Length: 86
Image (cartoon, rainbow, N blue to C red):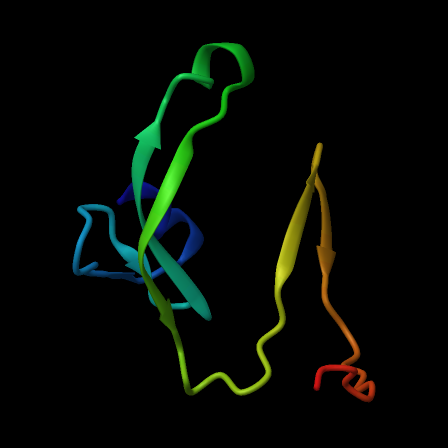
């Protein structure tokens, strides 16, 4: 919980896993580790999402994406295009 305090985040209890949700996030995923066979070679864990949460109070949340090596992209302007779905 030291990281929560350091970054000013609020932990919320999850339903199906031990780690807490983050109250300030628009979306939280509760996950279980299902495969660790690639950890040593690629530092990769395979997870299964067992529950997803969204905050309905946030109507137009912005997201931040980590591109590695300290580079991030924050989404911006919303555009609407005609749907091509039937």
